[in-house]
Length: 465
Length: 134
Image 1 (cartoon, chains in turn green, red):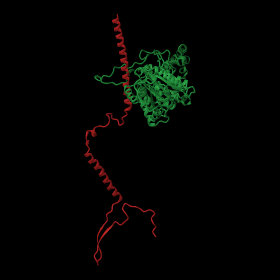
Image 2: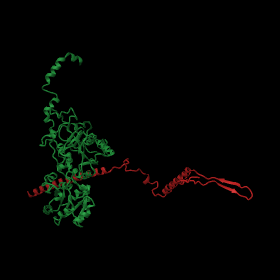
Image 3: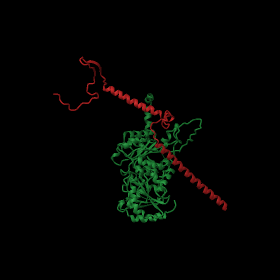
């Protein structure tokens, strides 16, 4: 080599000098191609994802996608396959070679690398019942975008209860995400759990600072995707995350029904030969067991299937009131409910859902001894109750979303028009009538108008379910 | 003058002279010292004795109680414990919920299939009727 170099010094430099202008090295090209760097984010009027600066610390040699890259035929484009492997046959003489679904060992790393396959995904969902319910469409989106994906969830103890309504989830674990100082034992246990499951992607809706980002990083997932704080608390979080979303405020729930829209945009982004994945509508599925259990419950309360209207949103300090974190003013005292309920026609009975047994006395006092009261704390039972009802009258609680998910007529009482539009967009399509208070406080809501609307609506809808 | 004691001390063995002396007394003679007996145990010895007594009692209760046990040395007591997994902690909740969700998924799938089949049947019937009309 040294000899060659000694003998031919000039032609080499000459050749290099000549060839460099037509084919410049990749890192010189990249600044000029910057608008093309992330074709996956385009085709969308919202350019917030496009403006996002790439973090140079993550990979200093990442110059974006190569537009001249040629992919082979294997795993090149389209969606991943659901599971090409035939089901296990216990009578097979060749035994059980157990590899994860859709996993050919020899070429296993190609799919995730080239096509971005996701086989196992973990969703870390912050917040209570309401926030978790609104996360359901995203899980369905994941299922549609990545066929054969296994979705697991980590949520708070309240939020986890919603997942009995979701057939798409595999494991749901309880971990108190909003605890700033978790017990070391719990923390390390959860780190071990998420690491041992070998996730391809971990999504988090908790606003991440460096601490939560490190927690997600320790899962060793390929894609660590999280919301981050919109303020200085996000410092350092980007180092541990591969994709970040910055919400406009520190309270994500204030976004209403589309509170996760940034994450939806990113998850549904088009890829090679895959069009943008639309966000599916919010659906819940209720098991037969819960249906039977709740039917017994409301029959004890003295109502029949399809002959009652669910009243949800009674003022209480219970943790089971299922409010959104983005709407603090969303419960009405029982006296106002008693007034509203008078407008219901005789064929329909109101069923008051109380979040705590201590409210039973108050309801009986305000409405009467023979009032139908059902004590429900879990969203699963509430959904089953709504499913068997003729309609729902509620404030901004999980009930309004569940009514929408089961296509029930609903009247939703909001503290202001803006809140109503945020939490129930396309109210007409969802058969939801939004009533809002003029003063911006729910307690000042005009009961007369509501009574008129309720009387009209539920006479019309008095048809067998 | 002896100072009066502030607090009376209490010993397991009292401070009275323990020595019992038996004397044979005959008038006009010197007394014969017939018998001298000291019967004295230390605190620790007493403790040992009582401890042995308690242990024996406990053992007796267990032993003789167990002979009246209908399940004594039976399968209920002798078989392996647990639920077949060799773990000490049975964290079953997540598994139960997972299988419930899988069940729910199957339920929905069956419903969907039934809907589709029903739709197909309706189509078929409609087709037949059309044929009949023709």
